[in-house]
Length: 258
Image 1: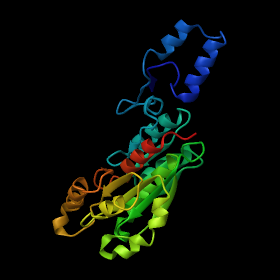
Image 2 (image 1 turned 90 degrees about the horizontal axis):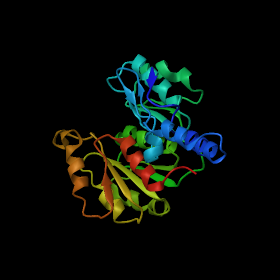
Image 3 (image 1 turned 180 degrees about the vertical axis):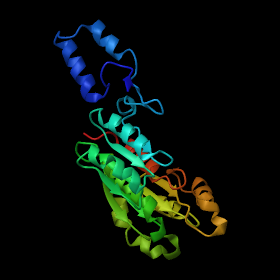
């Protein structure tokens, strides 16, 4: 393993370096040399961006699908070696979790969601996120969004099965939705629920189409197009079945954990 920098350039390491410069322990020229190249951990088959949390406030997530358990283990080990920040693996299976579960004492696997959380963000919650599903069949993607949002620092409220086929169910939870900072709406079939919610609440709405539906849903494409064509303003749209992507949008809206 080769790391193209002197130490990880994450927030704690950067703060320590700047304090050392201020205290006269490290010369400015030496600090500049240490920061001259952005850190990348080269595993040969993967180049891990350990600088990303400092640049963007969000960590690089590991997309586990098509990766071998051994590859996932080495990538996760390298990411855990950089202090602070969440470490997540998405679209993972039981074999992936078996390969990494001993790397972090707090490691958890949310199997229906396909999400491994090796480390969560520290600090107080950044805000409240509601994760809402149109139907029970949307729950695996909603769970990915909910568990990822929690790992990224949000307090999450879950609301299931309030699709527009029975709109009175949605109106019954209107007060809860009005009290959160971001609403993630997960829906397949016709994908109409995000528009209905965006017309009721003032919080930003992040819509996630799922591949749930009959033949003409085209694996979630119909819901995706409905969401992209929403007549309600303030709706952002993630990709089909991309619960983690929705959680990342919510985390950017809320800001970094304090």
